[in-house]
Image 1: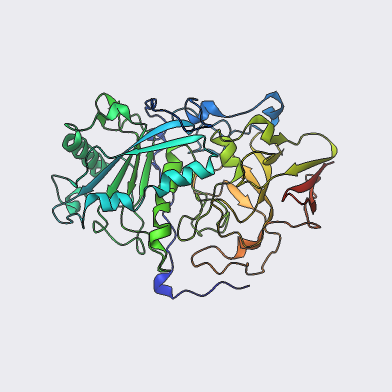
Image 2: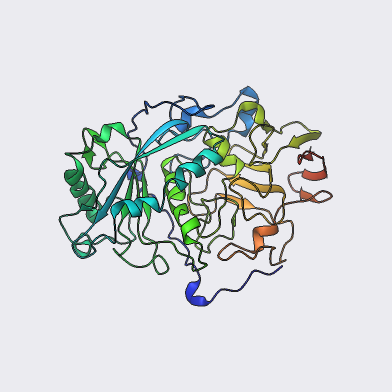
Length: 430
């Protein structure tokens, strides 16, 4: 089926690349503080995401890595310095406004555009392993001492002079009521009337680690997501879907790269929120769930054996069961195989099946580190949801369909599903 056409004025413009810092020297270090709250059932007190990766010695060949110059590599484990992605995470939320852009309505209404939806999204996606705790110690608009225009906020790198001044002023204004040492990350929810509409320019940005970040209470404000405007796709669903820019930006804080490219969402489509966060809900790839420490070693298989091996996959959205098969190609690349169905956070899946994609740990954020293979090339897709990349919406492989890489001698054949919703795949290495 063809997607419903959208008027050109309502087309969502591609998000800008490298929502983290664009200066490599400024993107690799940050400070975190451990959460101390009680955990929800099934959660753990594991440390930062990079250290929480569940693996065994058998996973070694699948733990691909990129060069030290790569920004936000897809390699596993995630390099050190990002915020924890398991256990309790405390998120400080500050709602800020300006003299030339005074807050619209109550500050807590702005907060309500993102919560409790964001914490629920992370709870669902992580199978309860991320206990996300948003806090608002300042419940009114925090007025900045300069006008928005004076800061000169554009689409540049984190902690350029304008941003550095903004963060310093924000810290000074909040310091009397906020102990920044208590928090693992900061969400700055800017009044939506500051700056251009997100339909024209997406200013939302995340500082995912920066040793030169301004300091508050002795710690760098390094894990910070800034959200501007309202990402309203014009479909009338903003109340349900507008929050999704924040899980995307927080994904960077946990070490995940942008999966969209200059051409838009054509590399991954709507199969991961790090690719498309406009409109209808979607989940993370299984690779990202492994990278974030949300899968046990027994749920991830590293397919290195020659010959044919059969695996049984359970839907990625469901708790428990085998979730991911990784087929390593070399030290930096590999194929990933998982089962996607319309449940959990994956409400737009219109052709359930086995998703196959290539991960390259040696490709920068926003340059295509992940590529989904389309089982129905040039079909136009099966979704009618607005602002969802249609062509890849039917990319999943169904029973009887096969993916082949003749040059590498690799075949992934999808066999019949069982009555439990599980799916068998046969992977052959020659």
